[in-house]
Image 1 (cartoon, rainbow, N blue to C red):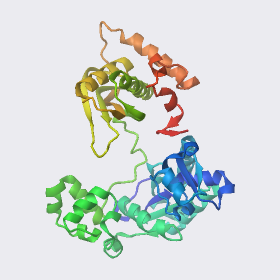
Image 2 (tube, rainbow, N blue to C red):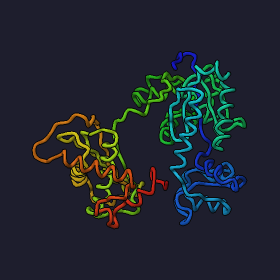
Image 3 (cartoon, rainbow, N blue to C red):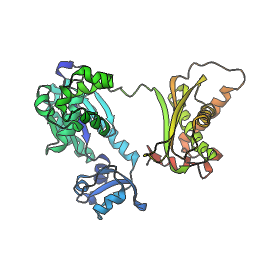
Image 4 (spheres, rainbow, N blue to C red):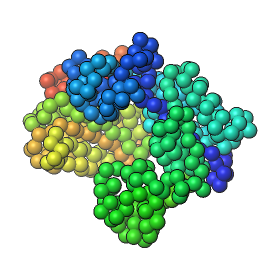
Length: 414
């Protein structure tokens, strides 16, 4: 289905308090109770990943510490995250959207763009489609959806964030012709793509509203931020020609994994254990997707964000690979060369400049075919019996994280 850029009807559908909404739908007994999803309820630790509207009435916000939230609301219901369930419900909601249009582009686990231009004759006007989507998602999943509507993606996003999320209907239409009247008076931090740091930069330039940014000479913004300055100017003026593209995330450019360690790692040998585990995860994903990579990257950070430490470096390999030992050897060399000896709390490995594993250069001496066959065998064992069915002995050390990571998705428990 294709649509004319000049007359598109684009929606940004956002699931309200998604994780918390899924849990309240699964637990009707909590319908009238303040609910949050957080790291570890048993230890009363971790951060708030989602808070239902009732919890937000107590001043509880996403990303604050669980202990602080409990101080605000001692009767708070705290639920441990179930990432597999949230992914399942998200995919279920995607299927609902796809029953209205084939042009659905995921933006995050709880936000998706829909181009319904070609669906208007089937389902009625934009408001009718938005209300129908809300009703169907609520009936089938128990999740409330807020929908911003406009002629392009950035305006539908700002219509949702600034208006649909704040009105009773959960729907707001922001046409391009109303940008000056409706959008320009808003404070600059309410513009899409303006975070706290950019807000400070803009305010130092005397720019306090979206309208002031829109009216700033484009040459001035280009001189200061290059192409990013032009992007900001276009957003402030409500201009965006990018289509809703269902396949936007299909092209893989790199495969990476990172982990936050449970405590500071000081010793090189201890750090090498999770580094090897990450190398193995990256290579397993690469083999599953049919890729090899030319470039290995390694990064690490300390826990003190006021005094940042760490590095991010990369090196090109003689041949593309998806073999764990080859990626780990490169990662180890990079780490040994660039680590400053300060404690490490976060570490990551990435394989990039990906190519198909169907064609590659044979080598004479290291028997890569045998190694690759062995690693693909272990992949099949893990796929069938779980990622801890076969592990390296080093992962049994205190510094190993493989067993704990096997219980998680995206850093959160399944």
